[in-house]
Length: 331
Image (cartoon, rainbow, N blue to C red; front, side):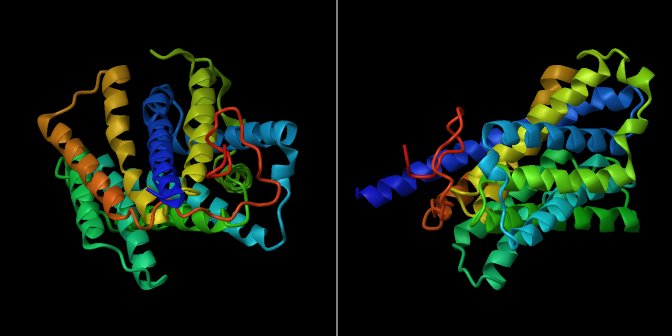
């Protein structure tokens, strides 16, 4: 095995681990946010606090620890605004809009058709030929997601809800595609920080976090006071999740990352079962297995595409303590 091949294999393994880690952190948002919403907060209020607090924490952290990552070129701003508008604010807002008019399972299925949109973009816009196994694996993964979400449970259609769900899928696809494009010139922390800041500005206009009722923030829940859950969602489900997710896109192509990210609803369902005593049916378990199997097939089938290292910036030569944000291929 040549040195280049070893590097590709190592990058693919590291990228896969980062995607699954990001999915796990993203998946904690539902179980952590649900008790807060039960206590009296609306979904819009929760997501506004989540993104706004995360943006402030990440911006302060990067400014103190890695201030050079806050330097961006003039051309980068178009990518940053697009990422924040679509990949952050758009995906969050449209998903909750879909949930408000459709069963959660249907809304989740619509949003997580994003891997199909990414694959279509890569195939017909970038003119990249994808292996047949990649298409088959994506289809199996989406079918598994339908089983996990149990889309037939309380099935009803609402035109506005369906449009919102489709919009959430388009925005989620933009998260992968625009994020991947931005990483050609920016560090993962750069695009994550500014993307969250842009998203926070937009979401604050929809649901200003400073208008939250103080009595609800102090209300107790089975997992602790509401305010502690909001902090946990901001730190774990947002700051860490977005940073690790952007790092994964430096090591794997967007079509692979998008399919592997389908592990998120499986992990979320498992976490909800562990923390909130929500039951898992046999069909959901089988669907989770099918979803992960499909994602594995895509990851293996896309091996020739995986591990394509994006060119690092001159200032991108040192990683953080976690080791997940180091320059690919360097020790």
